[in-house]
Length: 430
Image 1 (cartoon, rainbow, N blue to C red):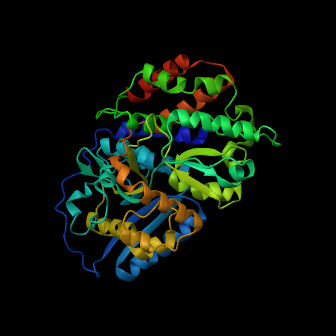
Image 2: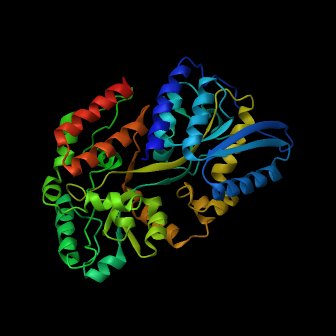
Image 3: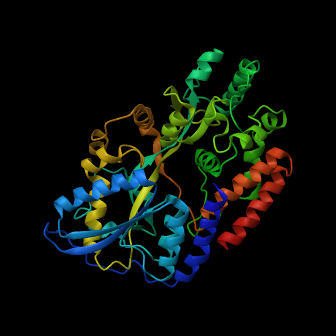
């Protein structure tokens, strides 16, 4: 996470504290029908670039073909500016009627009562019949449906087929254990030692907090408690980091100095490391940055080769509790989340569509096909909802990355990393 993203996340913590007394989620008798000629004016905002804005404009124009008298006032911002604006609105109880949400902020806003419970609209104005229960649960806070996923992905291990073919190394498999992974990294390192620049198996894969979340899921352990406190201790963090101590200490991971030099690409996206651990939708970024469509994807290795997976919402839609037009807002959420025409516009850029009908509407690119095939392959192993993330999660994730870089440079050890991480969480989570 960049410094600007960390600042935005910290700003969210500070400003939303002012909204803590909100009486959001005010009970509303949800309508079950919405006539096409109903007149209403609602506001809708999202984050992204000009390309995404063009797609949303096209989707909203389609919405107005069906509901010509619902005026949708449209607005978007880049990521950092988006949260700055939402924080200010949250403090004044003046959020837009409909807004795009990130899983890392959903619980934070919902805990302040800033969202309408959309559960009352299910089976009426909001169709969630085609959604997996585990995915809907990831948009549920305090037993209220406050976020409807527009797309989803899952944790994965990607690999560069071109590099592995060049080195003569077989592709990784979906049943690898952590010991297998360590041996595989060393195998790639040996094969790539004479390459200029040298090819590595992977960067240190304990470098991101999502990897730690995945590890906790495999152990059947929670990540955060219901009240947002960490459900792990410093020892758990140390054990996780020390699980790759031999590779780290022996210089077998992609060098941190080279990672910094290539920023923001890093080893895998720079074409100098074979493996990358990330959410499946990012395969599109991998193909674009590396300049190849030959990217494969399997489940990340575990201690015993078995997996516990979750569908992770990539984008969600929420309705503000302060909305004066909750019914019209719910209709817009349903349209954007479910319309096959909208899914055809966005493809998988917002994550894989959650329903079979939505996926069928996508004219799949190569990256979409790889992503969808992976999600189909692991469907039976998606048995959990992605953990609800607490207020300040964005800053916790950023702190993990910052401290891990210090660990790689040798400035701190794993015990110091865990201690400083918990000091940060004590401040952010109270």
